[in-house]
Length: 425
Image (cartoon, rainbow, N blue to C red; front, side):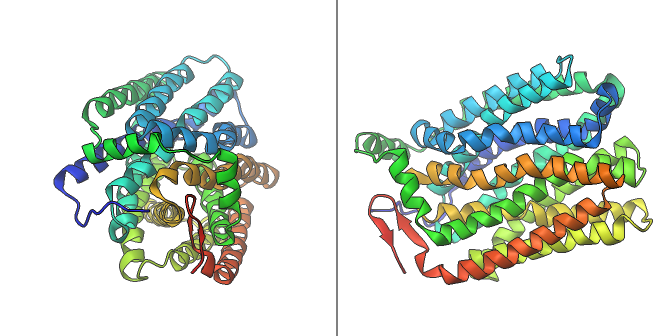
């Protein structure tokens, strides 16, 4: 199959990548912003830690079931339509969050918000792969997905600040309006290159295999399955931290709600810088070896989680130290995303990026359904988050070791093409 030649990114390409990243900025500003508002939401609805963790579970529950189908939809609709539809629906659903009288209704809305979000990541990855070459792909993936970190910072810092002034409902309503404006921005300014339009028209006229056949071929690749296990690590670590970090800081470390929001914001600042850094590090220092890059980050995540459980939770640290720890946590945990999606996207031809991304999303999202309530349940049982951090660290360590061992056994089976079948190396 012929691949598009694109040796250097033009200014227009960079602009298109930046437009794509605004989708993540809008969505994460609202979703992470709502999580930063959870101390205020918890107070109004009188929730315990386990109930708070259910929000992330409901949000990602729908994404597990729809992940593969949303990937197929992204392959069919293309980048622009997929982003406009996904971000637009998220903005409407967040607006409904702000007027919900019961937390149970918010959980239902979280389920549908996750469904809308499912369309965004495959569309984003599809756009990145189409616009970049392999030599710059991991870095580009890190930069664009870093938009999620930027959105997380905006939401985690601004929404609690606005929430303490106007109330969490008004703050969330403002966030939904911001997402609606971003939807309009993407619709107006993302113009797919004419070469891609022509290629898409040709592809739509070609016969395609069924979704079932595509999935069976993907699942036969054991190297790909071993990479998916790393999705479990970043799914459970991201969801546990973002779902409970503000509560951990306010309840266990006795900080203010504003500082807790700042801590979550700094966590996302770490992600903004970490994703392109680890992408660049993987391309240069590790010479594009995705396996080593993923293992290194898995090991660092387990180390940081154990550090929080064994040291931070037991000793008293000044605010500037907590800010530094928050930054390092985001720098490593969110840094996994760029390498993970690059690794799986390079295994298939470009018209199947949506399908493989959808399949790859099942693993982190399944762990996000389970991990946050368990993280909270352990904290409720022991009346602190200390043991939650320790168990998270041990689990991440064991999964990282398992990934490195099994991915080494099946490294020969790296490349696959859904049109041609498997190409073993």
